[in-house]
Image 1: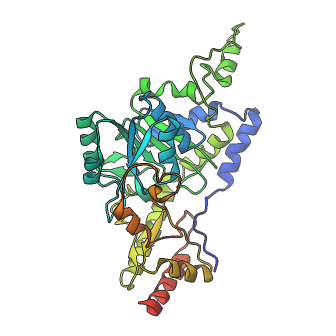
Image 2: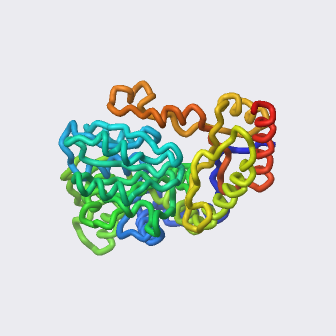
Image 3: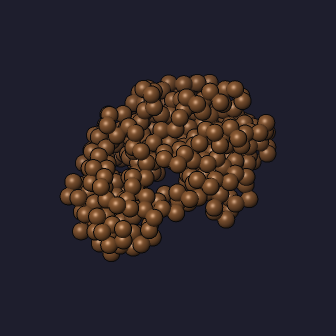
Length: 380
């Protein structure tokens, strides 16, 4: 059996949606992008959304909105993807790496408090694997210290924390629609906020600083405006826009997102039940939301003291695995920045990501669990 680690779930609905883009012959930034923004905002119950070409772009521009002084610091977990930290560097800010909680792998609030200094201006909490951070505590601390909060929701799409959608707790929420995520646009991202005025500049910032994108200029043309072609550039922008093709896929995927999340939750429950009595194998996360309909987990993983041997064994049986992630402060490029994270560094040694996606079957989960049991009997 060949069991994939991640796999997007695409079908006729996505093809039909793309065909509509072909029919109007407008592939770039256009009405499908605007429609996707509106429908995404409604789905996660937030006021405003701006579609971008990646979550990396969303994080970059979200920090840029606040115009922090060069050299100020942004607090973030070390257990995350590079984009969380590069967003700070793109804005001439310095990352400060915060350790993770041993069980949830989300940001450790006590370590956050210990590492705070007066030049810290923002926090980027990451809902690791879809496990929600303690947003109540993070928001309370940020308010006391006058810091902005940008939620990195790259690992969750439609998850909740204490009844409130993830991505709506902070000043801005940033989502990913990259190929491997819970729903996809191929590559893509979204920046969301209830503060319309705060988010408004992103429309120009994502379109190389131009105040009216081509789609809006075209709409003006239809109103018989002889200067429909005119635009102004008043700020430094980037080519970060989403296009109609990606948005068309996103619109089709969004209709399936609740079904996707429910299926992944079912597969995680099967995993958890299957490994319950397997020696040497423990769940990577507590999966605290798995028994309700408000979870949106991106990955399932286990902890094993013999992680590397386990990966080799599973690979020999056709089971794809991964390790998500190496703590950033252990990477050569980021080692120059402050923040020792002993818990993350220790947990990292034992992490193994297992297959989880929208088309994973019960038979495949049973096969993986059986392989884990065989490994345990041999090594533990």
